[in-house]
Length: 359
Image 1 (cartoon, rainbow, N blue to C red):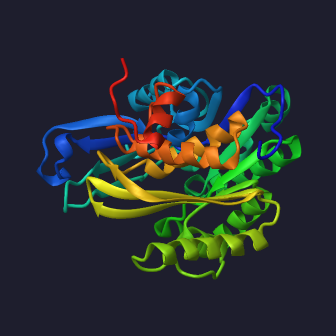
Image 2: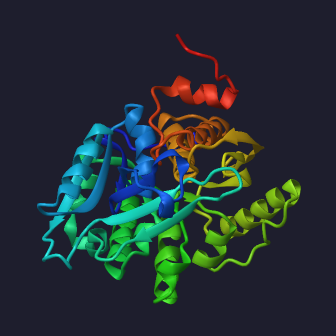
């Protein structure tokens, strides 16, 4: 076991998130030429939660829903189907130009035609989430949580969501809950107030036990100046990521796990997929190997979800990393942008490269 988890907790995993829907053309066609689309409930954070929830661990999300909205009803029902408990702040729509849930419009690409994603987040209800919306004393002290997972996407949505993530991290630390933070830097979210966001991200990272991010995340979100991952050479890429994580370890010495994925795109249907983890017992590296891709969106979230699941199960670092790698590979094989594992064995078979029929 990497670290001791809180006992007698009602929830294994707690995640604040802003929920929305994802609209995807059928048969991997481009958006502009399509007439038939599928719509699913989505958020990066609920994608992370789904690995643990489908595998039987108790999971809860904190979110905002629009009162009376059929999309909000769809979201609540879908999270229930994923075995995820929902605690929601309800907001009034306020007319046709008021609050709504985000729309994520994406095609998966095909062969040499890369995926394209368009985010429409105007009026997003999740941006209204604030520190006073939830009874954190009840959640962390009375109910109990083993791991809270925070995303930089939520922390950067608005000043109030940033403060909510900070308050959750502070309360979690006080309550003995493990704090996981996926930096998830997005340049468009940072344009208006980068200095405020850097302070928010720095404090959350200071309180974190698990830090996830690529070299851009660590440099641009936390202001670190480590080496570039660099070029097509695999050894140089791995050395670059390791250098970046070493610098983060110095800046945030209380964190126990530092992780990132490695991805090289062969084409839209095939990626080279790897991962790096630094744990208390040292480095663990999965050199990239070929995976088939139906839709790449959600692969990174699947990796984090699988990594945290292994952590919650008390596995050693190597097993956690392997399970994370395979959970990400599972997610990109599905039409949804999150994995829906039938059981642990399905994910382990992906790691082992065993795609034989199971009868």
